[in-house]
Length: 295
Image (cartoon, rainbow, N blue to C red; front, side, top):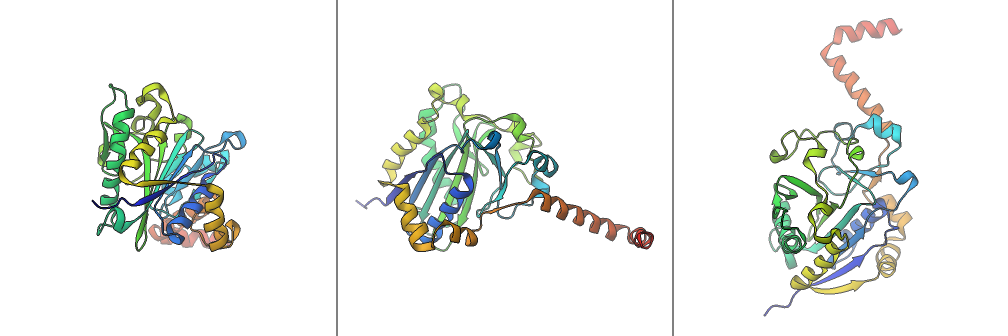
């Protein structure tokens, strides 16, 4: 009988904000060799409890976010180190992250689809135990976690040489007005069709027995014990060992990490310049005449 791999289970404090969480995750992916599962229950309740919008590393803010509204309401905007789409997170988001050594979990398959099939295999029994009898079975549909036609978790991945990361923000609850900060993406799952966020998403709390938000983490811990030897990690010790000793502290690591703040003002200005350049290419004579008039 082969020995099960070890996984280190790290429960992050709710005081950890999403930017700090993402930078810690990237450090564990790139500068550590252990398997990890990170859990965090919600974002800190910040000023006026504003949500935070998180873009994938290749996401264009002008196409994915209603920048005028985001700027007006001063909603924080980040670009994370992983791929995937845009998510909006707040105190009702439940975060779960897997950071794994490829050979121990998905040998010879360090690709997005096999990774998601593995994570779906872990989550399947969890949601079978949690969901109500009226809720449709949990599925991995295209790249989304769904109950029937409704999505309840946003996923993203980062794959490096011998390791991969898969993180999910589950929608325990959400406020419909917050979803208005997100634009309808040009590329979207086929099953979504043209549904707006309000018609495409569902609240996890509406599909779980007893509406107990802590139950997801409890059941996941049980399921991890089926696949791994689970070791509980201490957040302070992990930060000291990885962030402080290896990377010189969070301030120094933040300068190298790929998760960064995004300025809505700068993105708006960039978008306007792009529109102006496109207009100039389409109407060169008019643009030349306008330039002469401006002189």
